[in-house]
Amino acid sequence: MKKTILAIAVSSLSFSVFAVDQIYWGGDILTMRGESPEYVEALAVTGNKISHVGKKDQLLSLKKSHTQIINLGGKTLLPGFIDGHGHITQYADALEQAELSPPPVGKVESIPDIIRELKALQKRLNIKDSQVIIGSGYDPEYLKEKRHPTAAELDAVFPKNPVILRHASGHMLVANSLALKAAKITAATPDPSGGAIIRKPGSQEPLGLVQETAMTPFLPMIITKRPMQKEMSLLKQALDDYAKVGVTTANEALITPEKMEVLNYAAKNNLLSIDIVGLPFYLMANDVIGTGKVKWHEYNNGLKYAGLKIALDGSPQGKTAYLTEHYHTPVPGCTGHCHGFPNMTQEEVNQIFVKAYQHQVQIYAHCNGDASTDMMIKGHQFAEKKLNTPGIDRRTVIIHSQVMRPEQLDSYKKFNFYPTFFTNHTYFWGDAHMANLGAKRASFISPMASAKKKGLKFANHNDAPVTPISQMMVLWSSVNRVSKSGVVVGPNERVSPYVGLQALTSYGAYQYRDEAIKGSLEVGKLADMVVLDANPLKIEPLKIKDIQVLRTIKSGKTIYQAKL
Ligand SMILES: [Zn+2]
Image (cartoon, rainbow, N blue to C red):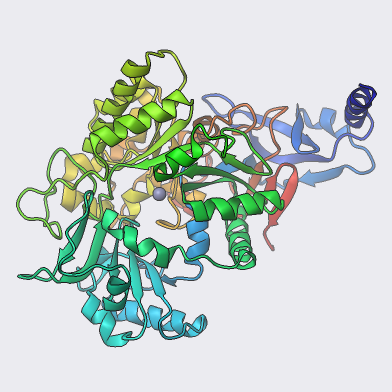
């Protein structure tokens, strides 16, 4: 009892006598509180929280000998960015994979370029015979050959190593013969449910390309168990890279048992410099829901398990997203009218909804196509009817919400569904979507402006390592929607920079149920902040992607500072 009183006395003492640790002033301090821009003159941090906002003179009068005064020199202070969906541990893994993305991210424009990058990786990491070589980010849309590489092409150069090429979407891969052998995939292997093994023309022999659930047997080769020390050094590099772009809350949206071990270890040893919101994959549902193994919805040393991840379909650029109206261009492994396909059955979706809702676990569902979003709506209705618990704030998240029908936004509103959009698609695959989906559907991908009109709160994301971690690029794509060839993909769905920023801050916090502690610069919230060299609300919109992050602050501590 005595101890508690003492603790209270000390904490109030620290506010009155030792306050404040930092005072920021001298630039645009954009709070991101509310629905329109609000600026304050100065902001003070005490410990890990924002303790004061207000007039400069008032706040500077709180200065004590230890107080750091930070003159922003005309730069802009904002809440730290919240990544609405991504894969920080896969980003860490990709540090040891060949970068096969097309420019401007990588340097690959042809199949010989892929071979060159794989050879360079083999040399850099000193990969021995029989060890796996992995490359990621290749995209046939941007290869000169306009097709996926084949097993035979990889065999010719790498006869002694299993080789795996991961498609830019993460929803398919190409394997060479040794990798196919290790995955036990032969001419006799049937296509798994929710997946496809693409065959050589006129035969059952695998060609090399496998899609969706057919990738599962390759996972042990991709998610290799490394010594924990190695895992931590890769994760540290990833955390530093995220801090560099101003992200103070990252996401790992596909947690396997191996990744859970890595993240738990990092949290336990206090190694997380930014927060990570983790979503265990639904195949772990029986292990993590209702067993006490996972403490849902609370941060422990920077790690929070926020909900369960399910994946209903593939990707629109890989033409595996599940659509009600068919693709307009040929689809590998499919003839006639091709609609993509679901990765789960409706019955599986229904049962997952019931299980998660019963235990108040939030659902985060990957849906790129409108037909899979329909499955989500049905799953929700099934569970609500069965459990009969109306009025609970489920905040079910639909990841990507990419190819949608306008009326589905009304269902989102009605069922309290919450989209995390992926507006970077308008730049990276906007031209391909125009061809594959037709202008009408392509123009409505990631419909942020329509969602705003409906009063929905939405996040935005880069889905790293699918597109680069640059929150300014994400913002730029939501404001401009310009494709690689310069076409504006759906001009009506462009949003103002302020709305684009809401997706990365206050609305992003809401998605993760963090609105009480993050997302805006308000007294009592965590001092998660970023300093930018220009104000996104005042710069020419096409220049937003060039804005530099100068400083990133997590819980009052500077974790990144640009060298000027
Ligand atoms: Zn993802």
